[in-house]
Length: 85
Image (cartoon, rainbow, N blue to C red; front, side, top):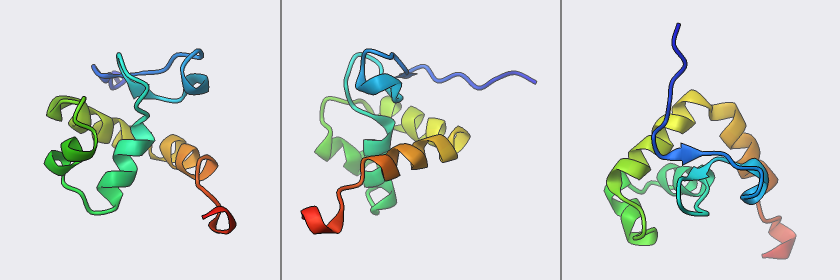
């Protein structure tokens, strides 16, 4: 069985503590996933993150499909508590 590779998603301990990000940016996969789970189509995500390409967005969503538990943990760890809003 071959492991899935993701052309645009990288992890580097020096960037966001190793959280998966889009290569060449500090945009975490979780940011793309949260927009998508909030109802934004991949094409609409580019309106909020115009420095990305559609291919990068789709790769981030593919990475999420392959690593759902990991990204959900990052989302939860970075959630702003209701009391802080």
